[in-house]
Image: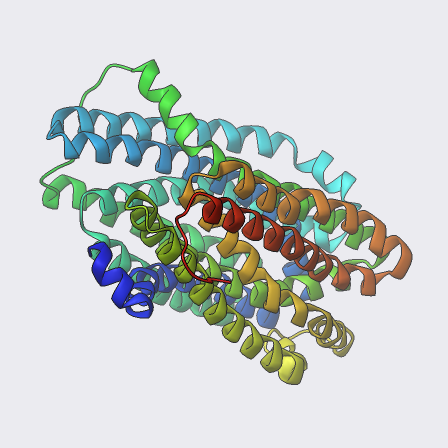
Length: 449
C-alpha cells in the first residue's frame, strides 16, 4: 500500500493491517480463558490461584521466545531480501538451536527454585501441591511453546502468515477438546490442563517443522557454524521485547506476593479471573498497535508526519470506544462472568467490585499501548521506553506495594487503573511535545490534535 492510499483510506488501512494481528492475539487469549474455565469449574479456586502464582515463569519464557524470534527473523528477512537464502537458513537454524538450549537450561534452574518461590509467596497446602503438579509439566511445555513461537515468526518472514493462523485456530480447537476430555471426562484435575497444553504444543511444533521440511522454498534447517555476530545482533534486536516481558514477570510476582500477604488464595483467584478480561483487551490493543506500527513507519519515511499523527488519533479513538464497551459490559455483568469459572460467591463479589475500578483501565490502557508503539515507529525509542517503563514497572510496582497496604483488596483493584491513568497523562504530554517539535520544523500545516 503506497502513501497516497494510506492518506485517502486511513480507516481501511488501519483495519487491513490490524485485524490479522488482533485475530492472532485473540486466539491466544481464548486458549488462556479456556484453560481457566475448565480449571475453575473442574478443579477449583486454589488451582486457579496456583497457576497465577507461576505466571512470572511463563513471562520469562515468552521473553526468551520473543527476543530470539524477533531478533532472528529481522536478520533473516534482511538476508532474504538480499537473496542470500543459504545464510538466511543458517540464521534460522542458529536461532532455533539458541532458543532450545536457553529454554532447557531455564527449565532445569526453575525446577530447582520451586521451593524458594513458594516460600517467598507464602504458599502452602493445596496451593503448593497444585503449583508443583502443574508447573512440573509446564517446564517441559514452555520450551516447546518458545520453539513454536519462534518457528511461527520465521514462517511469517517466509511470506506465509496464513499458515500460522491455521495452526493457531487448530490449536484453540484441540486445546478446548483436550481440556474437556482430560479434566471433565477423565477427572485428571490440574494435571489434565497441563497435559492438554503439552500435547497441543507438540502438535503445533510438529506441524510448523513439517512446513519448513516440505513447504518452505526460502528457509530450511541447515548445517551452520556458530556466528557470534549473528548471536549479538539477535539479542540486541530482541532486547526490548525481552525487557517488556521481564517487567510483566516482576510486576506479576509483586502482585502475587501482595495478594497472598493481604488477602490470600481467594484474592489471587479473583485477580486471575478479572485478569483474563484485561488480558483480552490488552491483546486487542497490541493487535491494533502492530497494525499501526507498519503504517506509521511508512508515513514517517515519506515525511508524512501529519498523516501518521492522524492514524494514531483514529486508532486511539477506535480503542476508546472498544474500551468503553468492555467497561460497560463488565460493570453490568462482571459477577455473571466470574460465575463462569465456578468460583465461590465471595470471589465473585471481589471480581464484581474489581471491575468497577478497572473500568478506568479499559479507557486508558489502549491509549498508552498505542502511543508507546507509535513512538517506536517514529524512531523515538526514549519516549516509547518511558511510557512502557511507567506502566509496566515503575508506577505499577510503587502502587502495588503502597495501595494494598492501605486499602487491602480495594487497593489491589486501584493499582492498575491508577497506573494507566497517570501514564496517560505523561503520554499525552509526550505527544504534545512531539507535535510542537514537528510544527516548528514545518511538517504540519493544520491541527491534528
